Length: 316
Length: 278
Image (tube, rainbow over all chains, first blue to last red; front, side, top):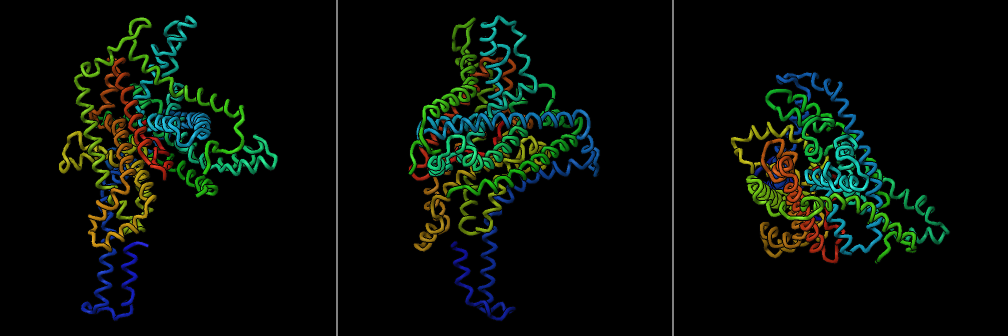
């Protein structure tokens, strides 16, 4: 019970008094109570105003701007343009990239999370792996692009080793890093650790008793994963996969750093249109951004549905 | 209380072997780039080693120290803003307006799903409108950074708030005659300092790694400058990048070690769900 509820309980005694008389003690009390209730909500105003200005206003400008032409009149021209040629192609590439890296990240990250869950839950090793995952998944950005170039770039470590080992010519081995596949490899650097962070709690939630029960009933490794752990983990796994999709879909820094020119994916297209801000088409940037929001909303809705199933087996 | 075998069952040789294969292969995939950065930034002629790039971090690029300073200032401002806006609101909601809890939670987690690249498109006009009010110094970035760190800060503080009984503590303090500010600063804050600490650290790490918004609004933060440096001096930029990653790792590792005590190890949030800085 909270304090405010407490206060209101104390005052319900005067509820039946005649209304309309400002001087009447009960009415005054009720007024004070209402003022207090308003005060309680007022306490959250600074926060609400702040996010209103710095989160909802920009988002509103994107959404409303998507449906205007460059003179500020209502128009579908920019939205229509998103559905054509290069823009549609870039959107499709972004979706493919996100699907691919989310699958790779979910599988590899899921395995790594399992390997971590097998170890001592309070061990230094686990905490080190988790800290590393946190850094790579969330704070990497530009630095991951550099890491990728230092590894697989023209003079990267792996490229150099391969060249020394197989006597390949310097420029025959590193072209792939600037393709969509290369982008996928570098995105996987942050997808795997993110999967670890998201999925580990679900693995930790697997009760040892379930495994013991399965063993006692004569179930082997396969039976346990097929009939017990698999079905329990499936919703969290799918949910995590959806989050990875969104993560890759909205990623910008790594790709921007790696590809300083050209815009094979939607986020980089947006860059192209806002960097030349005054001259060309900000309306198109907003339409592209709006398209991204739509995709994210669809995926997050699916996520919310999946989450509901995942919550079923959560042990409190 | 379970111990070493979280998914239960016998720990067969096959299982132990498979675990190590996974750790080495997947962990190796993640570690290889970091090792390559170390190798790349210490590369001399041929296969020889030298540390020139590391020695020249401060001298190669005259703009880099300023960019680092800016990012550190932004990190500090963001943390201060987080402590003075989000933390009091969360405590207030818990004590005085419980009906608002879901709303505050929903809003706080929202920035995870709205891509930074989308926010930045709408942000330029907002900053233009507000510039008479807040000026145009690069430090105004802290306003939007505070929004970006909301989800991470919320989770950390929320975990801490849930682990104590704030209502009872506050009632007791009020009953003994404490004012609301006293309740907040002398009762609640000391009890959730772990959550505040990890919220602060996550915010710092996030701000130091932020690129999308600062680069598109043309402010010269650490990441923007490192990216620029990459075009002219690859070795030094890789050295700076590796240093920044290691710094982030150390920060997170310290928080995970200091934190949580015996009670709630699992909840000392290393952040989950939704990366933000890629």
